[in-house]
Structure formats: structure tokens, C-alpha cells
Length: 144
Image 1 (cartoon, rainbow, N blue to C red):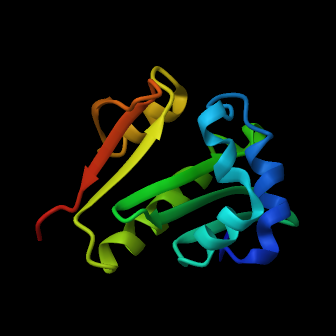
Image 2: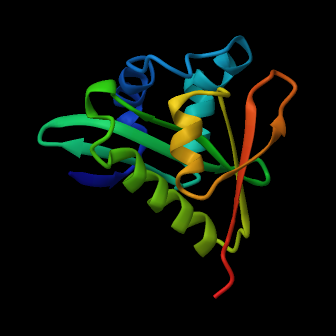
């Protein structure tokens, strides 16, 4: 398993991975985030990683500032879930945010999904729902 910094050259693989998932499907309000220009701007923030297993790209995650710290997406091909891919990507993005000086990170996901359980198991806390009914989750930097 190899984690590689996301670049504009990975957009095709990002789309392939994003549309391979069977949970957290694209909601109508998220379509604008899939436009090439938006993805290029998000990737340019340098908070994303893509995971390669052998010769196959199997997962990616993207940390962005909008202006607050947000996991803009973390997706793993279903056949690679449970192999540590998502956890490794999440750890990289979390470290990146905290190294940037952020003390709290936010994300949204579908309530009652395996993704929500994945984040809860890694110390993320539910903070209600957004205007679209998605679960808002946050993680704070631990004091040293």
C-alpha cells in the first residue's frame, strides 16, 4: 500500500473511486463539487492523498479549507474496505490539517452509514445535521 500526494493528474482515478462506492452516493447538492475546476482548486490546496495497491488506485481523501478545515471527501473502493486504506488516508489528512495549525476538522457523511461508524471509531463526534440532512462530525486536536 502506497500513499501518494494527490495532483491534478489523479482526477480520473478520483472519479473512478468516487463512483465505485455503494454508500454515501452523490447527493444533488454535491454535484457542483465534482466539476473539474472545483476539483482542481481543491487538489491545489495540497491536503489530499491517493492510495495505490499494486498497480490499482483504491482510495483517496481530500482535506480543504473553506475557510475552515474540512474533509472534502474520503472514498475507498468497496473491495478494498477493511484493509486499512481509509484509516491511513484519514491519518495523513488529519496530520496535514494539524500541521497547518488547525485545531478542529469537520466533515459530513450519511447518518447511520459505515462511514459514520468508521469516523466514530477514530474519535470523531457527531454534531448534528447540516441543511441537507447529512451528519456533521468533528475532531479536535488533542492537547499534548
